Image 1 (tube, rainbow, N blue to C red):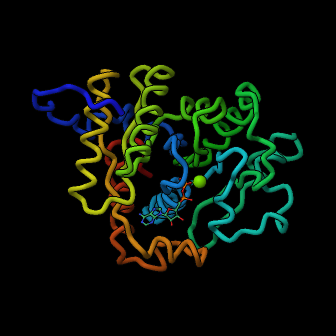
Image 2: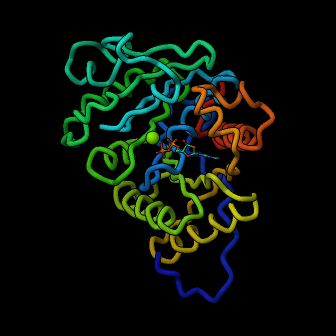
Image 3: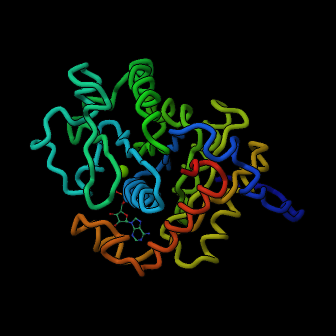
Length: 283
Ligand SMILES: Nc1ncnc2c1ncn2[C@@H]1O[C@H](COP(=O)(O)OP(=O)(O)O)[C@@H](O)[C@H]1O
Ligand SMILES: [Mg+2]
């Protein structure tokens, strides 16, 4: 990222409480997309853990694996796609099943999942227009949920960009690595072009400390202010935590396996903040 030549101090951050665009409870089924630009920053793990946190606070949640071509929500959760034929996005796209019939329940997590098409790569080169029926089906299905989370793939090609632009709220994940920051900035830039005035918020993941996470956010915010005239609020900072890796290795949910983990508390805080800012309706 080009460091913006700003000598003057930053304006105070936009109060997250003012960002919500609708009254709590006004319309169910808000779409929240999770994007990053760069892969491996923790999108899928965060999407799963946020789905779990929101479900625990009483929301009806659908987690949609929109990582087109390299889906892995099902793998992180230990679902075996072969055992659940028809329960994936591919079957929906092929018209073999309706989206509402393709969802699986995560019994322990208390949320629903629509798996992607793991490893097939079939969706990677999808024309964005081909996503129209998926989006329509998602909006339909969303009526039965308080919140639909979209775990987006890495990269910024058509499909990811289309899904990001379609969401009511975009959560952009970044880590303190410079390449991740550059990629997160690129996502913000495309979103600003696709959705002027849209609701994009930053999540800093794998932060070495809350203060380091705040600095990462400040860097990204400075660039967004200087070059995009946008002031994306901070949705939250998640600390780097070895128990995240351990939980993923065991295909377990962090919030039940390690409820006292720092990263668990951080995701819970983000879930609560989203509720407080009307990105997530209240039951
Ligand atoms: N807060 C965290 N602390 C420690 N490791 C993390 C954290 N978040 C993610 N990771 C690590 O990053 C890896 C990639 O996560 P994943 O969710 O698959 O990323 P993405 O979906 O962005 O490609 C995980 O396997 C995990 O080891
Ligand atoms: Mg992923």
